[in-house]
Image (cartoon, rainbow, N blue to C red):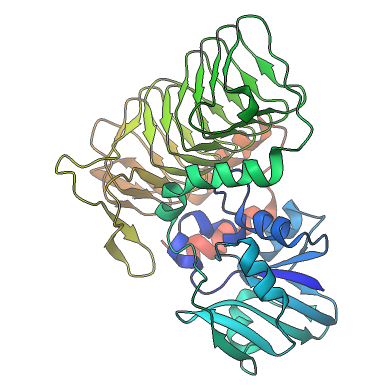
Length: 406
C-alpha cells in the first residue's frame, strides 16, 4: 500500500500560513501534520498532494519528496487535516479500492487506483466522484489555526511518547544546568546548554533537538519543543505549550506559541497563544495580547468568510504570515491576523486584520512595493546561507499579489 497525504478545499481557513505552504506542512506539537500522518502509518513511500500554485516551490524545497506527482497504481489518500490516531489508521487501512470515509462532509480518506501523472488538491472533488463514501463518526479534523495553538501542549506530549521517548537520547548536562524530571527530557546531538539554564519537565516533556543552543539563565518549562539549530537567548522564559521550529532565535517571554521555522524574536517582550510563520522578525520590546479585558472569547479574521469569526477560545494572540517584519516596541492586539510580507512599525496598536504586503503604521498603511519586498527577503535569506529563488518570487507575485488572496 502506498500513502498520499492530500490538502482539501479548507486550506484557505489556515491563511495566511497556507498562502505559502501546504496544510500538511503546518506544525503542531513536535511534528508537522503530514509528518505525523506518515509516522502513524509507518509508510516510507508517502506522496503529498497540495495546490497547484505551491507545487514548484515545494518540489524545490523538498527534492526528496514526490509532490503532486503519482505513478500508476493503488493509493490510500488521507486528508492532511485529520487528527490521526491508531484507531483511524486501522480503519483507513481496511478500505477497499473505490471506497472512502467522510465526517461532516469532509473526506477522511479513500482508496483509489490512479493513472500516472500530476494531480493537485483542486482536483480531489473530481477524483472522488466515483468513490463510495460512508460516514465515520469518530474522526475529527483541524479546522482553524487557533485549534493548533490550543492543542499544542497535548500534541507535544503525544509526539514525545510516540516518537522520542525511546529514541537515542544524548542527555548530557554541563555543571550548573538544572534539569527537573529528566526522564521526560530528550536532548539531541550537539546541543549546548548554558550555565544556570533550567529545563523543567515537571508538568510535561521537553525535546531540545540537534544543535540547538540554550544560553545561560534561560528557563524552559514543558511541554515544549526547541527545534534543530535554534537558539534560546540569555534569560529567556519559554513556557509550556511552545513549539519552536528549526533555525530560530528566541528571547523574552513566550507561551503557548507555535513558530514554524527561521523566525526571530530575540529580545524582551511577550508572545503568547500565537502562530508565527517563517522568516518573521519581531523587534525589541514588541508584545502581543492574548486575553481580552472582558475575558470573553476572541474573534479572529477568517480569509474564507472574509470577516471575524468566534474562535471559541478565551486565549488567542496573533497569527503572522511568512516574511513579515514588526518593528521595536510595537503592540499587537488580541486575535490579530497579519498577512504575508508586511512591514509594520510605530506606536499605534496593531489590530484586527492586516492584509499581506502592508507597510507602515497601523493607522497609516500603504502597499509594500513587491520589488522592495523581494530585495529584503533575499537579503534575509542570504544571512542564513539560503536564497530567495525565482520560484518563490513567482509564488508571491502571481499567487498572492496578482491573485490578491489578501
